[in-house]
Image 1 (tube, rainbow over the protein chains, first blue to last red):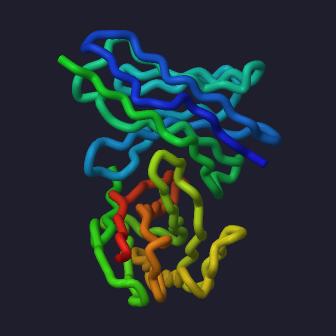
Image 2: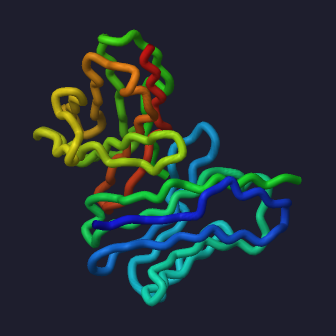
Length: 112
Length: 114
């Protein structure tokens, strides 16, 4: 079945550091891939998505590229801010967006 | 963006009682809502898909008599945990899908059963 594996956290960085959170997936067919972010006390929010191979999703300085050959969708940001501290979830869905399969989430802590 | 609200955000109950959690789409109509359960340090696990006006579709291994889902209107779905036990303590999250297919998530409800 479909599954998502993402790196365990917490990831602790200083402000302006480079961020990478790894995500790999296992799926039949060609799923859509997502990154969701959960800020403290809030619900999950869609951060970015990619629907086909080699697509790059981007938002708020975050980027992730759909790599079919490595079945990966790593999240990157060139310079993190304290306000980026949150839990980040990688997820996939089938083409109908019927169901999302989530990774375990990675907590990011950014210190000033 | 669209907002989905869950209530209550935290609830503590005694073993054997039932607890109802509401999920509302505040500014859009949602024919489909989803209920997830999240254990500490684990991913969100889909429990059921709630369709307005029809019975919910439960994932394998989820007891439908234990977790009652009602989607009586286009803006409200409820999850009732019946005869709750300590092992039901968890973080329950709902999401609602708008007419463009985009998903919006509630803030989650933390249930603690004593």
